[in-house]
Amino acid sequence: MNVIDAIRARRSVRRFQKGAAIPREDVEALLEAAMLAPSAVNSRPWEFYCTDSAERKAQLMAAHPASRMLETASWAIVVCGRPDLQPRHGYWPQDCAAAVENILLRAVELGYGACWCGCYPSEPRTGDIRAVLGCTSVPVAMIALGVPDEAPAQKGFYDPERATFL
Ligand SMILES: Cc1cc2nc3c(=O)[nH]c(=O)nc-3n(C[C@H](O)[C@H](O)[C@H](O)COP(=O)(O)O)c2cc1C
Image 1 (cartoon, helix red, strand yellow):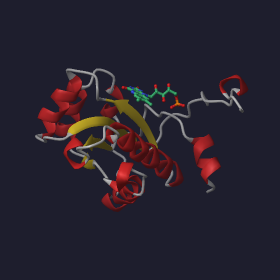
Image 2 (cartoon, rainbow, N blue to C red):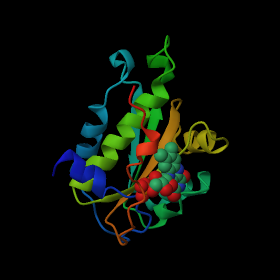
Image 3 (tube, rainbow, N blue to C red):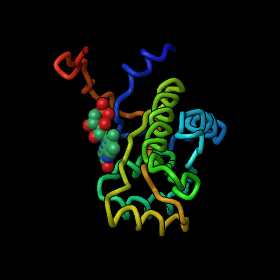
Image 4 (tube, helix red, strand yellow):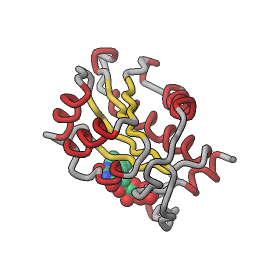
């Protein structure tokens, strides 16, 4: 699959085939894509928490008010920032966002659906998710991953009015 094909095919999927098993190796393939993302001064200021536990997913859902799709998702992947690894710059949320997008695109290639659920800088969800994970890093985004049970229409489009050529 070409990069542009994956970009065009990506959608936020919010309904999944409940109980569908996604092997850990596939999740690791997503994490490889995530960790190949660019980062400021190559600081790689991220870490990833992955769970397919129904109990953990329920806890994460309770901590994030717009993550109901975790009810049917196979996995939750939480992308967390490590500002401590980038003490002289404040780019870590951007680095984490690049990692998130790589995960979403690799998921398309593997035939999965996903939805980006924003965490940082919204409170109390960021702190609540950190408490669920028991981590000291900063939850930037939670990704619901599963086998799609819906085919949402494309929302993105090229808008020439947003482009300025100087
Ligand atoms: C930073 C960010 C935070 C988002 N947070 C949520 C969220 O909490 N819950 C949700 O259902 N979708 C969330 N989304 C998904 C957007 O709603 C979605 O990308 C947008 O509606 C465009 O649809 P598409 O992804 O299918 O192109 C988020 C997307 C981004 C980039």
